[in-house]
Image (cartoon, rainbow, N blue to C red; front, top):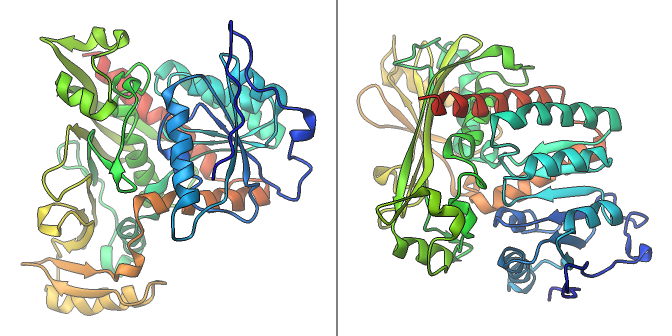
Length: 456
């Protein structure tokens, strides 16, 4: 069971006051988590499993709202599940001064951020100023004017010897991993082409849905999730993953900078949500006051969709994100990705033909027949640390890579993988040299695209 210590706040006073004896920094655990304002289910997924080096006592600091209650219920679900239950102990402080109280009490050394993005830049900056590590869900910032503050936060983190790291789960998806590894095999891929604005070398398209099941249950979203002033527009939200993957795959372990990026074009457009649809995914009877600015003809216009075309180190790239209300029957979120090489294209598809399972293809093979090319591809696959990969014909000049189910890890499980990587960096006391420049470049790209899109 989850242990919760909460006292209600009256007259604007503080909630539960934690004694100094409650601090766990002197425990045998090198890492103690402090979850701040958990408004997104990703905050709970960080705790989907236990970690040997992480204190099972987690302190939650939040304002009074349904958000933190849903967070605790998710943790309770992990603790009470029949298979591999967790044993987290959540100690909660609620009150309008929750963030200041966290900085005052400091019962942990890692601040976990996953929720309303409006104040995330402030939370990151002030946490680092206080000498705390930050483990943040994407996006870390949603506005161009917050970019300088994020840059300064990274400088401060370096000075104080603490880490800032965002949760890039998509790096752990098996088809993406194989796409990256094969792109580094010149005998298979050749070299990455430069592309053009109309035919980029790299394209990544992501389609998501507001009505979604998480851990087998409907995911109730907070009303603010539909407010782009609080959640962020699509062009700075989900695109964070896509821009990250382009950098991670095309320029592996290379130190990038904003000077490497040039935004060519960017656009944004809304998803239209009816009052009935909004109620179904939020449990709210009507649109809150803060959404009235986005109501047109009685329906909510959510600018959750965006596309950017840009150059990075001379390579043309396209990133696009779309949000629909719900997925087609049997479907879910989808991902399309292509890397164009001089010998072939590496393509990830996740449509109905693939039964909405990410599938990696080697397409448009050039200069050799697919039959002759198969041996080269099979040899390259055999050199990778994944057993059982197989190749089959998938049409003219196209091959498909069949991946054993054991490598099919769910999106929810990826959070544990990212967290384990973060814990390795915590133990080392530093991130790889390319990670911080990569994060700075990534958020320069997403916020720069938003700025350009809004100029129209």
